[in-house]
Structures are given as C-alpha cells and as structure tokens.
Image (cartoon, rainbow, N blue to C red):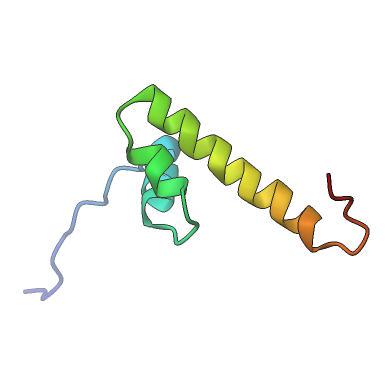
Length: 68
C-alpha cells in the first residue's frame, strides 16, 4: 500500500479575488478602507485622500515647490 494521499488540487482563484485579498491586507494606508467600505461616498473620500497623499506630499518635499 502507498502512504501517499491523493489531494484534489485547489481550483484556480480569480484575479479579482486575489487582488482584493492583497488590497485588504496591505499596509498601504487607505487602500484597505477603499476596498472594504460599503458606501460609495466613503470609497471616493478614501481614494481622494490616498491620491492626495501620494501626489501632494512628494511635491511638497521638493525644494522647488511653490507655496501659495
């Protein structure tokens, strides 16, 4: 007798499922909030905040940044 156990291979997961799991578990601040929020307004707010963080902050750190 053989000691090997036949294990059925897992069905391939969909790309959307994998990306959602990745987004929910990332340490990128705001991204899990966008993915897990149920309300569209909250998703939009978090998206704007996240977008602002990664566009405004690098510009602010440049020496040639113009203040208004």
